[in-house]
Image 1 (cartoon, rainbow, N blue to C red):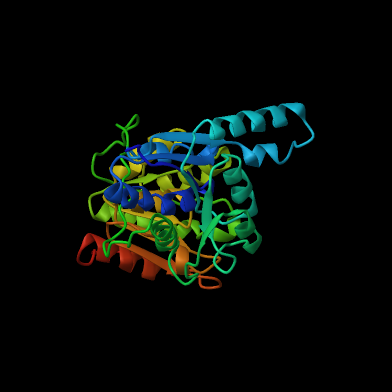
Image 2 (cartoon, rainbow, N blue to C red):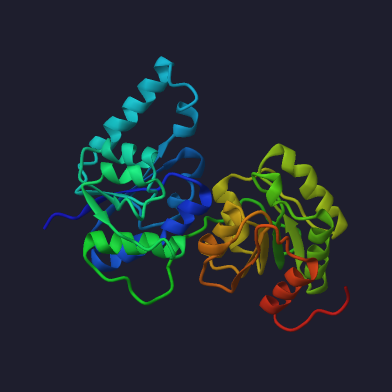
Length: 325
């Protein structure tokens, strides 16, 4: 019997890609010989590459291409991607994004495409591109929506078990000054997501009280100065610029992670680390922190979490109450 060949389409953003990963374990439990490829924005390709159950990760650069659609090189690159997708000879394409862009790229594989119906998709018009459609409640967490969609299309029931993200972090390329450490993630793509710097310093000092080295992560050049300022306030450590896979290694070794609603915070939870996610400009709702460790999402639209509430969650994760501040 020929192995089932599947293409999963979940292109962005990092948190969304992380939330879709449990479908791989679900599929392989029912179809152990399935060959699963993954179409993803190149900036996030390192995430599915951490999953041993994914045969091939196919990067795309739609975010770049859409800004240069009049250039010949853009169309050449898109044509090469189309040829790559067609060469996969897939039995089924699973569009877990539910957007027009993802649906159109899913169709490029010239294989049957499955996705959400018009009442379930994030962009209802995307459903017109699918040969097979499933209604999935919009009231479910993003992780569960992906699992339910794939289960409906492959004709199995989702197991009543926690999602298994299946990520394997590589060996670390950078080590903090102390092996026992906790991670702070104070930067995000939008300033409206930010939490006051003095609060981050307080969390870092709470880690110090617990015997852990605070490690403050950053990704973009304009984020480094904030990371260094917070670290200076709590005797913390700041790594050099790290690629996504290298960042995953740092997260995987942390005893505790506290971060904004950003991709790396979701990645930490998916790696099984105890994680607190801080939400300052929208509700965590159906895209809150999810993982096999102790996780919590706090805050919401117009509800910036207090320092005391975040510290209480940290203390709860670490066990008991900390003395001092």
